[in-house]
Every structure is written in structure tokens, then in C-alpha cells.
Image (cartoon, rainbow, N blue to C red; front, side, top):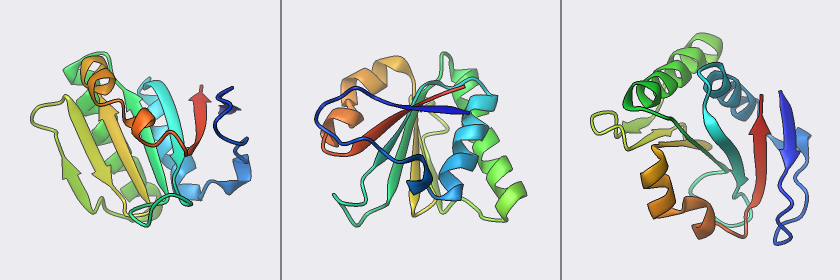
Length: 131
């Protein structure tokens, strides 16, 4: 996995080692199912809600479901941890997988552009994740 910091001048460079192991495992599960435009937002300095948001998109309803299912299966398999809250699987426009310290957002392109989650948290350290 190759992690590259965005050139966004609003945030300092993120350190790879700053990610907790769960972030790496989730990223790997998403990349395994070809997640598009995968980003990690480090929000530890901005909120107490969570430490990281992982944001990505899928190209179809089927892919969005596959991304969500792969994350929940791989995390349970590799860590024994269950998703605390899961929402959006019915509509497949915006699926949220809440692991407390890490919250995963899987969008379709239209919904991601509309809600612009990355812009809401524009003070976060943002790291683009590439396969």
C-alpha cells in the first residue's frame, strides 16, 4: 500500500506511523474491493467523536455493498472486532461503518460530492491512499 499526502496547503504532512492498525486493515479491505478516491482524515485534534474518518466511493450499488461487507468481514476475521454501528446498506448511497475510533464512509459519487465531507473537516490532516 502506497500512502501519499495530499498537496493541500491547509494541513501539515501526515505521518504514516500515526495511523492505528485498524486504519491500515480497513484501507486494505477497501482497496481489495477497488475502492475509489480513498482518503483518511485525521480528526484527533478537531473532535472527540472519533480519531479517523476513512472516506471512499464505489462505482455502483453492488460495489458499495461489497466494500462495506468486505470491511466488516475482514475486521471481524483479523481483529475479532465487530462494527459498533452500521447504517445505509439499504440505500447504498452513503454507508457508515462505525468502529468508534475509526468511522468509515462509503459513498456513491453523487452523494459524496453533495455532502462534501472532506470540506466539512478541512482542518484535518488528509492522506490519499492508493493501491
